[in-house]
Length: 336
Image (cartoon, rainbow, N blue to C red; front, side, top):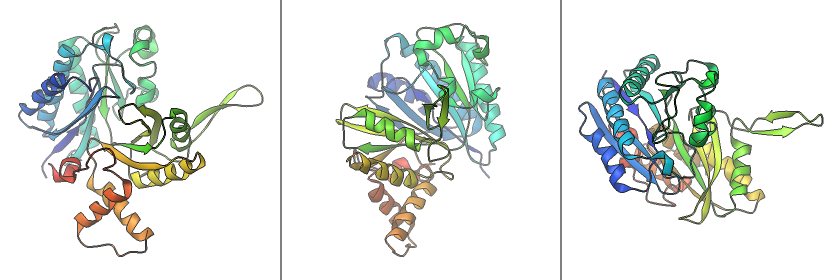
């Protein structure tokens, strides 16, 4: 079986096409890696880049793209809706076929060492590559974001796994590791009130919310869905809000389950769910699950034609609400 690894780095630039193209070009010209998707977002001021290929080629492409981000992105000037702490913000390695999670952990460490040694910047390991339990969760590693990084680096508990424990103002820091296939999935709400999106996010995400007890102590009340991270975001370009979600294991919580949950909560606020979007790529299986759910809900018969099921899922989830969803450019199995 051919060894295929996916890498989905997120860079802190979603508006300057020249910078985005320059980063993507580094991947295009790397042997053993194939660029699959480049998805910038101006409101988030962030671009999600997806590529896949042989393990060695993927590590080299990730390093080359990071080096270009180091050269072109100035974090002292960066503003955006999405949490971030560095120019090359998060660089995950994902096993696709013929590769184990353990092998991807080693790839992430190879990448981290090369970036730290060459660029002399702080690198943290997360998810399956984490060196400490508290570093598994990306949101904990990234807490305080870029603005709090200088102080964070002074704390011995947050000494980087690779590179110096010194603040590099233009660059910040990078988080890398090995993880299961993550689906970046956003549900669109027909309201400009970000408070509503945030409230729904707290209800659905696994971490839930903190509440104050009668004795004055705080306790965490978990949300309804496992393997789910979420927050509310306002999209100025569309005059809507989104519940912005990371599904860290779609076999535990699938996009259609989250979609139904948010529709249920939105009715409480008198808000319409107009559709949703997948940022970056998705496994085919996740859309087949959604399509089959919608067919069975309407007491239909599941067709043999796989593409018909995908088309039903696209319509049901409203994946073309903000822009046209093209399966050939969004489903990883159709691209590799």
